[in-house]
Length: 187
Image (cartoon, rainbow, N blue to C red; front, side, top):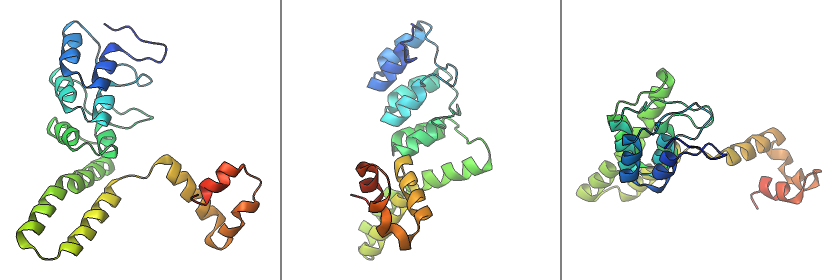
């Protein structure tokens, strides 16, 4: 039950990846290891990123560390926030997920506020029937602020900021492959 592929993937990871809570439960009953070293794929992170809250519930009931921080992914709560998996965010928060320090706690509290506050915001608009457009603007600003930019987008912004707004028109003249020039110009 603890065999790994060449990529370090275990049967428990596959069960959580596919959303099979019953299979995950069975594997854990037969001695599957829920947590490995930080270099191997984590079933908890996978379930959180794919929105399989039932699998998370099984893992939590078996005593998984909900604060497991992988260097390349972060914590399961962070992964759930990035993937916008509201049910997984709630499960992890109710399981006692706390960040690794004050900054992380603030980040997670902000994330929970944005994602869990949206239904309440929509309810208020329906009840009041006023300020519809301002509510829509708030909703989109919440979503924009709570959704982290991808690494790809962050790289593009960093390069564009380094080049400077006044010299962006010179990007086509750079000695770069065409695909990178197009990428920097949002084409």
